[in-house]
Amino acid sequence: MSRAATSVISTTSAEPAEPVRCGWATSAPDYVAYHDEEWGRPVTGDDQVFERIALESFQSGLSWITILRKRENFRTAFEGFSIPAVAAFGDEDVARLLGDAGIVRNRAKIEATIANARAALGVGLSDLVWKHADPGAPVPRTPAEVPAQTAGSKALAKDLKAHGFRFVGPTTAYALMQAIGLVNDHLADCWTRRA
Image (cartoon, rainbow, N blue to C red; front, side):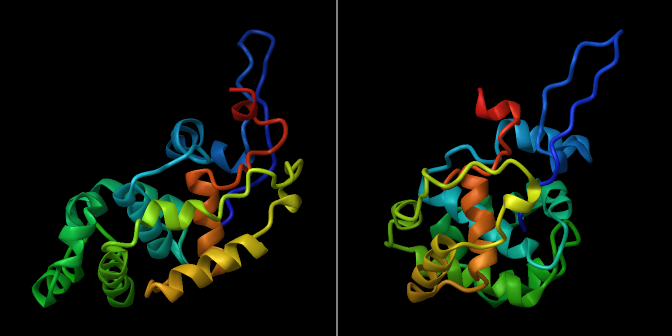
């Protein structure tokens, strides 16, 4: 899901000005922290990239805030998103995860996450994903200028699928690209562009 929206600023004469943020980031405190500290910042390391792929896949069809609020539960349930640990999951683990109310209990997404861990073994996942970085992407000024998918996300999705990954279509791949810094979709007036 593309998380762009209008940038807003909240000021009064008695209060210091709040930094300008991408508008989606102002709708909940969880979003403010995620936007300011993580979204769009480079993430490397195979397990760290695997975590983001898994979370973006679980988010498909849901609100990102749902996944963000369950993130620590996901980390516990999926062994900190250690690729070798998740790749070793079997039927008992699938049953355990389906009974875990702290995560999204969707069999297809759970099984895809396990399959994706197996696909990631020995691939060099971070390198595979980062070769699709697009640092020269246009700087969006409005939410309408932020795409849901691009030629780059289509290529990334195709590359991941060729390596056996599931639940990674072009839209999910683009959300991943935004989340881990392969593109910078903070709006032009967002404070993070000056940080």
